Image (cartoon, rainbow over all chains, first blue to last red):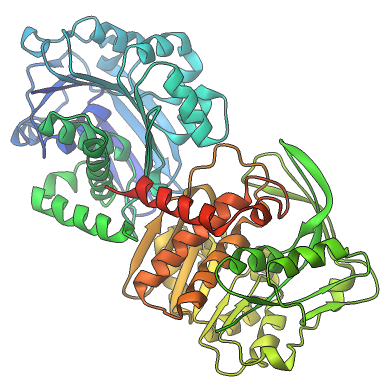
Length: 298
Length: 298
């Protein structure tokens, strides 16, 4: 089994009530890769610029991330600058696409038979392009974001027809479905193609629906959310990473996968950038999973 | 064991995207009483006017609610008129206190040794007055609302020093604690007096904290929320009703009580007024509790 993630690798400048970082390692594919790496090897498809440091490369390598698909181009790495006043809502101060403006994902030949494909929240047009390059994957999952729902909904719907699993947040689910009730909205998303929808609700946890099953899980309680950036991608990394490690796709495996995703997200928000995720062990993850089970038992 | 609830019995005129009702039975103590009645007899302390119909009295009686503490005064019953555009936020169109303006809760002698006391979200001044009338209760629980947090915080803090259990919603918890992180806010509330805080999060479920325990539960999924009025009081009724029926106050009993509260709230929002709660059976409740357990298992 192997996992391919296609998304952004970025440098983020972020300010929260607990401090700030300048051009720290970030990006959807980065968070996903490190989170998934605790369970299964990941192949990364993304683009960075000349300013992407060897330290960042080493961090990814130390987590066993395959970088054959990471293109280094002339110019600067994608840079996002944002601020959280309320820790639930990001305010974008600047988005400099830089080399990412020319991102045209090309999977190395060795990646094309990968069984697990995660399309992070990139342009649906690029997501479709990736789907044209993979051969008989076992599971295709995707995320999206409000930008594409507003500007590229037709392409996004084409993607949804071709994915097995849609992972997105609650406001995105409501936007696509045009429906305020989150359960009803999620059911409408199932009609658009995916066999399963997993809705991320931040501090309120997550839920998962198929046409026949429903699962809901609270978030792991974090008293001090230092930086929520990347929580959703860490969650997805935990989910897909665990699924790939088992090779199974039954309801029970999905539920455990979502619990792992919940745990990875909870670690991620405890510090800026990849600091927390890169400092934990599989044992830390197992301990928190046990706590999560204890917290929800009745 | 017996339960006393002190709160409002009202007539509500409510409009939601699914329809409307005029002067339908409502009020915090009403929802609480009917919900709790599935588990244990309830004694109701409230005030109504001459327009309060015999049909409403019969409904309460048919659920075994003791009405010795229900005062019928000259004038009209408390009337609340509200509208929900978004089903998560109530817009108050009119509040006519009527006889409720003179509500001065006096517990009948036979109520004063009741073991379980629930102070619904009435003026903290009145909550304190009730506390002065009860003798060595086993459990005192209270709710509150933004109005009292804004206008009577000192009295409210006096109440909190004297209750065992605080049940309130997430925005109220954040307001009292002056803290945006809900976990941190809830911990601050514990410092104000109660041994346990249960936070209601609407569609996101509920959580419960003591200085040593943490429990979180998602909401039971309801695809069509017809009218959310009274959900919080139905929840509290399920919690206290179940606790009183067991006579226990260990963590496991609380967790099951909170699950029952979650189930009662989920029924309540499926129709206007008390319509849904007054049409279900204990078997319906048990069935949904089983489903809730199945939905959250991993």
